[in-house]
Length: 220
Ligand code: AMP
Image (cartoon, rainbow, N blue to C red; front, top):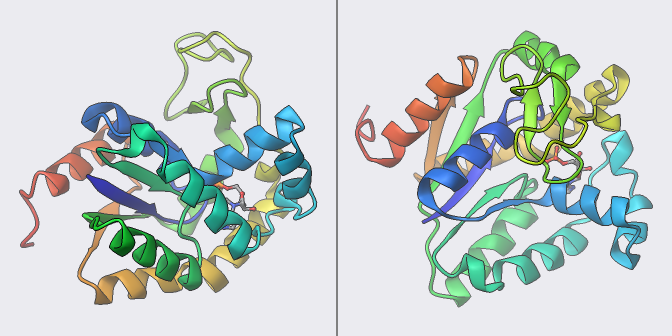
């Protein structure tokens, strides 16, 4: 199964992606997490990414993102499918993904568009915490870790992302509206888009996603 998760920053893509990945046994590919990880490890690729100011919410150029995704989806764990979170983010990225899949004789099964009112999204940013080791995402109110401040999976101290700062959040939402929101129409036209009400509890949102993927609501 090959899936794309679409939706504004802070809507809960990371949380749902982890659950989908576990449930269907497909790798969760988050371009944002790949970039943050490379920056944190100080690799040559990470130093290159740092120049694009992802900490300020600016997009990495299409050719750089595309090359990173191309390499990742050729890894053996992607042979039975994968879930893309944060890619594609622009129309050229979506067109390139179509080309990659066609070349490999693969098919995109669905694009899940997570949607929520802007006020909910802004509220979610302030409580979001991430694990710097395994990228697990939590929210202090809506999706708290079992022990406050610590990752359930590895026990590492959770952190707030630097780009969750309110000024940068505003910039990220503006960039999303300008460059990524057009993908909703793009995938709507291709008939692959399914919109999910992401304003509900994570468990309820996940239930909607599974129901959609199992085909129960495809005709609604
Ligand atoms: P995310 O974790 O998906 O919110 O991504 C964090 C940041 O990484 C974004 O704000 C962008 O700066 C950068 N980024 C992630 N994915 C992409 C992409 N597909 N195209 C351009 N920039 C990206």
